[in-house]
Image (tube, rainbow, N blue to C red; front, side, top):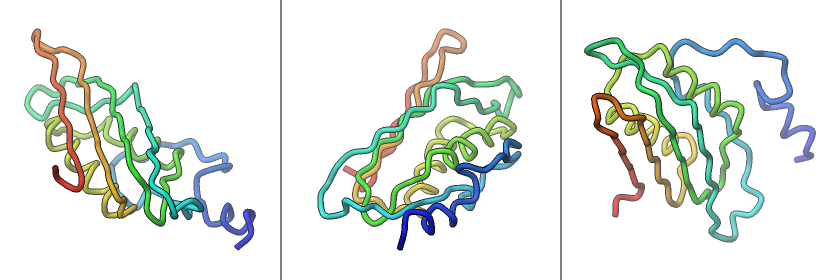
Length: 138
């Protein structure tokens, strides 16, 4: 498959679309073939402007999400990941649930050899919350 044909299948990258989705859905996540599947290597992605709303107070929780994975057949397209992560801004959910949902969605879409998703939330009430999910479980 030519590079152009692979790029034609992507819905967000290179398109003028800038409206962010209002609800997280794994269908937002797009992939492309891993051309180096013969070896293990780590891909690290950091989202330093992650926001989700507390389901009790409605106050925003700000943090950094770090995603590290060893791809198998597929890699995540980063603009689609940006749209997916940004869609949590309107969600009311606990940080622990959000990180597990992100991990589950990425596992479902990518079927990676290894995956770690870490959330480092900004302190609120004097407590800093860090959460890590690993796949496969250690």
